[in-house]
Length: 316
Image (tube, rainbow, N blue to C red; front, side):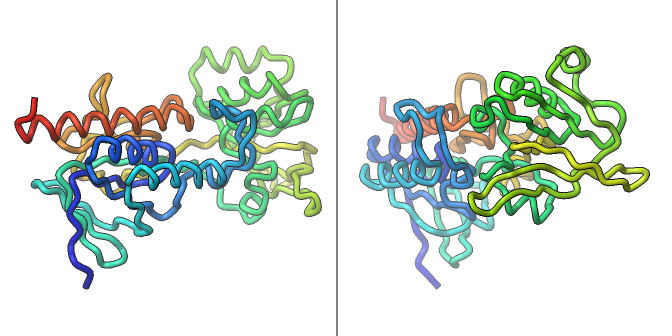
């Protein structure tokens, strides 16, 4: 069994929040160890073109995450390819157990495990992810200027994304399995009044179809929930907007959560309900969910951890 690894600052997660925390923690001489988790690089590794990262007119999501990883490593952050399966926050040093068999102990902990978009689980949905199927309108809507788009969902997220997509699309079809939306009434009013949006009730997404060379979506097949009848709608983009699930399984029984599982942090900080444990990025953010805001929170978490450790060690 590998020997236990001790560090002043352990970072769990490797998206923009985790890697930025690694940069700042390393610069603060905290000798951070970053455990990448099940999806190194996070959600951006499933995104193709990114056009809203400051300093890059356009960058591939996977390339951006490799650059962030290299930056953190160059600053002195140790990057470990492991998955944390158990976390003990009952006493310091905190203890994390990896799938590799390694045990990590840390004086301070930064959680940056992110959130995952909820998907329908269709094979065709998976096949076209990043090639016309998306779960983030603000990330990818720009690529569908003048095109027809389908949005699947009925809550606030779906309605907000449908409204946002009208800035680019020639037409947006909102598909919902019931005959009424769960979204706030003010959002519904805006949706129903918008000339570019059509709502299709009592339908679910049955299949996404398209081309392989070049790979791209050409349309969707929708199934009526009562009759089973299939309707085809041509479109270039399909946005699955059925919510996000924060990756808070490790701490669901130990940290204070809110808004359906997001880690609760103190206002204007990244401090959680346990001193010495900090959280950043989409794990805490049910509002913005952007790479740039996650990176900013990673910076905050490292600075918060540095100050907290200094206080514990009696340093002014």
